[in-house]
Length: 159
Image (cartoon, rainbow, N blue to C red; front, side):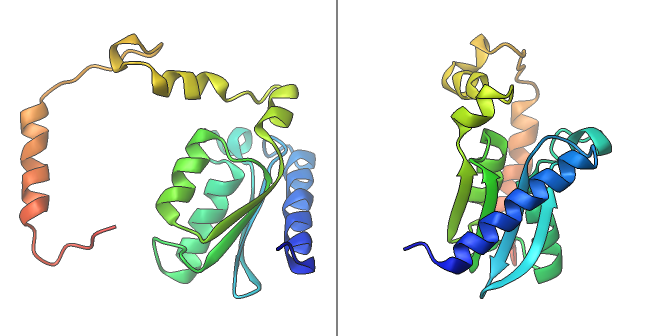
């Protein structure tokens, strides 16, 4: 059930998308993270202003929320975002584990203005050797040695 509070928070995410765009920070995307009815973090796209291709609104907001809440998971939080998350943000959201995501525009709406992520979904489906960017497996056994140490590590923090 969508509440008036949900509408308020999604409107704030949309406001942030305009704010970031108007400030020439990056594309027209904004996000808000809420816990117990209170905003704990906000973000807008900062890709071009920070020269960081990962500085999407959702990622910016997730980083701020985790820092503020001193946690790497947002299990009791809700993310409100001005647009359906791209594949990178979707991955970040799943790692952060919020309880819900509300979004305004769809990925099709974003594609209409030049933010088309379909090619990434296509790349994920391809065998690694057929991707447009070359991926080269190197020193696998050496790398797996660290994985084995992780498996045996006492006191590790699983996530």
